[in-house]
Image (tube, rainbow over all chains, first blue to last red; front, top):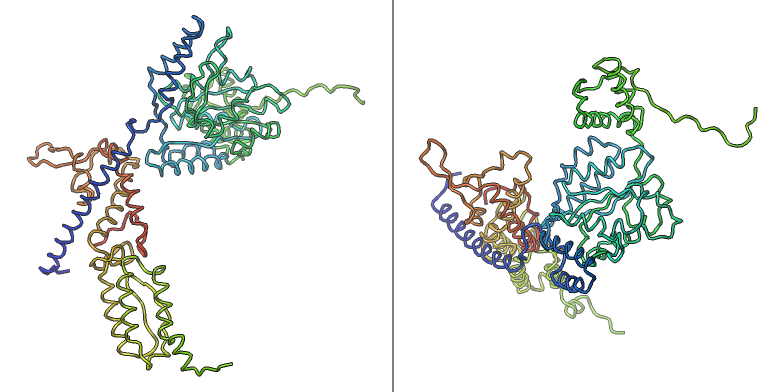
Length: 360
Length: 219
């Protein structure tokens, strides 16, 4: 297109108007942005209020010497770390691709995580906030391993609670320091970190049962609700902290054994046992993990032979891990540096003797 | 019961011509861009002024906006009415759909929209900010280490006046200005907030497709 003097003139005027408009917009927006911008560092949120901290210190002064010393030490540590903490940023949805690869039978859960991450990324601060997730499935399908992989992928501090062995609510939410064994709970300890969005894995949550009337997981009812979690108080210290950014991931074998009020607070996913086709990447992932963690694994080839892989693909992930480790042990015993299909065998539980009368 | 002749009825209720004009005027606010409403009211006023018994039975079917221009084509052959419509259609083609100021047709993606320089600049700025923020999401860190000034659009450069770094390539006398990935990361919240504000401002731009990276056509 030939540019006539008129076209050039019009383009110059056009550009000048655009420049004026954009400069004006940038100037106005900068003022508004500066006014609305809190004095917090980027990506940080307040964990506790200064007034609450002051009130707790006054309360601590009225306690006995030993208790006061303990409370003050915890409050000091919280204040040293700062009243504001970093909130985990939502990763790009494609960051979850390794989960899709290593845990193909968890594709529904991974897709949910990707959606939540995409949603969180729409906000200016991109703070990650996940719904409580409940993974239900048969034993050994890799629920706990998946939960740990999610925590590692998000790069947030995480803690695993074996709910079946948990003694009482104070494991999670602390015990009054008036008691001899009183101390802050796991959640307080987790929040005393530079990041205030840790991931808590509640393993085997169904092992608690529905018939118990004690308060093992009583505080969870409040913690799983985002609104009430914004002012969570540890029983030992009583300082309200914002626990709404904590992500909860629970695993269970039998959903019906979880109390309905607790069950409905989670987004439930039924995890099927992986098919032999889906087991292939799972076995590859197990193999990679063994090579990463075990020194002796370097003596064997990195890739599994195809026939060994085929044997392992017919098992559950847990069985495959055990069988693979046993296979390496068998090969080592026979002074071999490679695996044979005959090394891979599944140790089945011996049949229990029948009780009562036995008919012959 | 009094029986009216058809002509008498038309005199009482208004002619079909007037009634169809009224219907068009009522639907204009919902169907036309905000910037065109004033000019379209003037068009309706002109057509109403041309109301005459000889046009009493003429009816306007309605109007549409297609590819940035008004489509109002009465089925009846009337040179006066067609002349008025032609005149105003040309006027609308160079009236900004957002603010009503003088403008001209510009490409936005695959559609043409009459826009003034200011509104077009803001709309393109929105697209370019979106594109720039996408560079932060790239998987290849090398690509996002430094963005040279020349690789940024002149509109975005106006927003990043304080973030430039001077760079002199080895063996070269020229000094180029560039934006480091860290500086862009620092500016990202402000740019995102600005983009959201532009989204809100430009949401009312009737008939303008939403901003998408790749909307780079000559204005």
